Image (tube, rainbow, N blue to C red; front, side, top):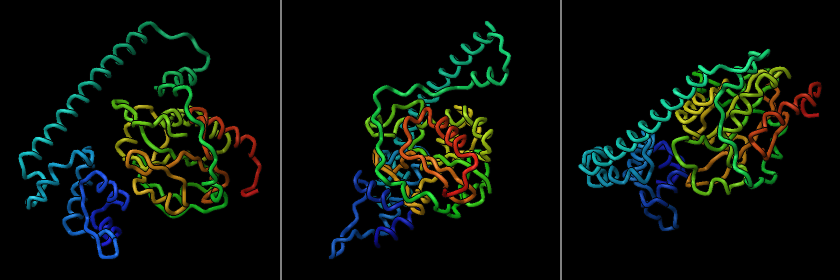
Length: 325
């Protein structure tokens, strides 16, 4: 079968199939005219990679399970090597949990010690509460500045498609029914894992670094945006929902994040993306919307850690502007 059929049957994207092949996990045949020819076994292997990925295994960690399926077993974990791979992943998770638990205990002790020392008096309780919110690490100096390549120039005036996504707040968000008024949707490439190193070469990709910092900046400027009549702020990326939920919990984000792993919104609106470490990711951009109409686009976004302030200022400068003027 062709790549599109195989991807649909396995519940993955065509790009994922290509990545699995690049990793040496799939070896589809070729038709006489040179097209890839996927078999039912290729589909089964891709399904196994996807299902194990949902449990946190990387594609390269699925090798023993795929070998077990190729040996003719009904399940990928029918072999001793698969059980060993399970245990290896469990051990790694145990180590991560131990590290995070230790960090959590240290933070609790330091927080409680600071609370016992007391805080300076303040006439603004809201400001005092705001200053106690967790923050992301400062961005490193010297990050490359992205340039406007024109990839978002077609977006102003476009209408949002009727796509639905599950939000981290438990809501089911349909983009064409978010609000009749003005609202903001900011797109970002990747949620960082605080317990892991950033992807190799990430700082060298213009506009890639700064997702947590941007998320915090929108959190901290949410009141300013609401003061300008903004109904809602939403965030969207191709990240897994559990990664997004961890970010919301860690940074106390007061707005929902939406997961679009298949980049369906990118396909509908022809949004700019980039490739990194075998993944296709959204380029950072922000849509200002009036109902379902894209009123303004911020692209490229830089620096991300002050971007929400830039958006709030834009609203202050365009309070009485009618759409598309």
